[in-house]
Length: 467
Image 1 (cartoon, rainbow, N blue to C red):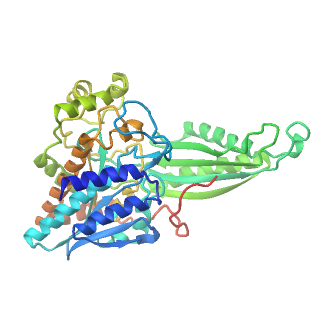
Image 2: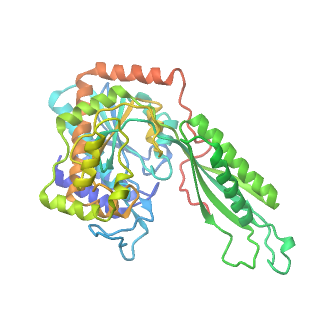
Image 3: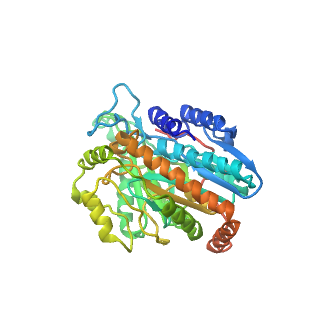
């Protein structure tokens, strides 16, 4: 596939910076490229207008590449600028997680495998699955809930990063809720006894949850934000208030249990304040089921393909962004590994970008964060890699990732991801026994347990903007 076309696609999506379930232009651009490269595309799958699947080939095995392309709120930033500098008169959105690269890199892999099937005449099907709303909305969870991956033999994806590695370890399950409190307004001085403060209820909910933190597992996380504080007038008892909560734990049952405890805090706060509370479900993500067989396949492909190589000009560019972070902060966020710790530390201190492949390691430890890739991993053997697209020190959901997102260094990481994923898929097509081994591990890990989506059946894809 034409490298300029891929890089141009990534930059085009960067410019659109569309958030979850609104990625219409980004989706259209990706479909255009896929059709131009011989894929048959079905749009609007699983009740999501910006979800799609592009297919080439026939028969088994079926290998899916997962593409993301949604942006984040609060990430408006000019490209290549070494300080926080929003684009004038633009929406307050930006690709602070590199999904413009993610989607284009997945397409690179799918096109390469399509060309491989053409060259070899081998039986097999490659699918590029357009998955919207990873940041907020849980697009893949809806696909998994609707049985989309029931005929998939292996799913492969990647994520831009500051390191080159095959991802191991689980992710956290996560449930998102709105608490909408209803009270009674009144004059805060003249007749405060007639008021029932929704804002008081919201604050007491947070107090209760913050006390709850002492009595939950170390692997649990709870975050909240005020979406509506009831107005700007302190002399009016606030009759309405809205909170948004994320509740995370290491697996679905424990996440559900912790969520119930958080809900009880909100109900108790409403009882204390004489208000009422509506609990509105927003989204749910499952923890990730590892697959060490596929991790080894991806690692072998990564070793074969090598890591991205940079010019001196690109290294200077990356160093200029690395300089926006202190060494102390950089060293506080190194990859968790049992080997090569000193090499990783030295690379982080001395180099502007990761220049080697992190060691092959397998573990089931929960990482602090959530992804709807987890829902896919509950129904099909799934694997993920990272490639270095940004300077060391820069973190996801930062203006630095947005600013570097159109650079040639970021493009190199994207293209390398496509190369590695395609090489792994071709290995699986040539050695179907590896797929069978991955499926055997998958069944063993589930131990008879079946996938149960955290999103209730009556909740459909929606934009999370309740206020």
